[in-house]
Amino acid sequence: MSELLVDVEHEQGAFRLAADFAAPAGVTALFGRSGSGKTTLVRIIGGLVRPRRGRVVVAGETLVDTARGIAVPPHRRRIGFVFQEGRLFPHLTVRQNLLFGRWFAPRREPGTEPDAIVDLLGLGHILHRRPGALSGGETQRVAIGRALLAKPRLLLMDEPLAALDDARRAEILPFIARLRDEAGVPIVYVSHARAEVAQLADTVVLMEDGRVTAAGPAAGILAASAAG
Image (cartoon, rainbow, N blue to C red):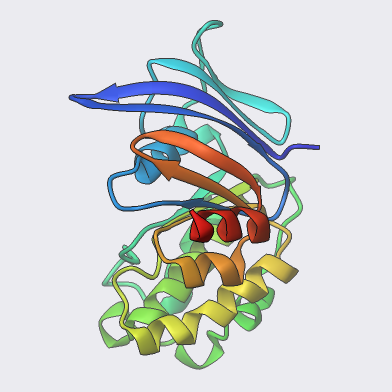
């Protein structure tokens, strides 16, 4: 069964987006060059941009259907965001930043508890620190943990490693892989880095000039795009 169904069209100035794909649970990578429409598409899924036409369905629930006048507000979509910058609250400790995510969690929905998130992301030794004392990789791990504690049905990660150097990327990639394997939350992962996508993705949606040119299992799509 598809975890994510997207069929949308949108225009921003001269740029046109036309994306149509379905993806199962796991990590779905939106892969392509800068300017191909990846971030616009992920913002449509999250509700930060309303498409001119189309549908977005997550886990069987329709979040957008322009023909039927459906547009669920972002705060009711139960979608977690992780951006290029961690966007942590500078005056709060790591523990307090993490627990802030719980304010947005539905009380009766099952989800991972804080101690399990701390262990999953290796944050136990920095819980007392403030964001100014964290490395870039640590900051992103805290941002991921905060998003998970909101008990999202889908996690959107928009180039979360783009602002990091090679050493910090190597530090955080294993944690994202562990998140994929253990947390059980579907992820849409935006990247133009082939190595990241090859390591993390189950499904790849290949984008070029605002269009989805291919979508399917990661190994096949990456091999075909490299050959082309």
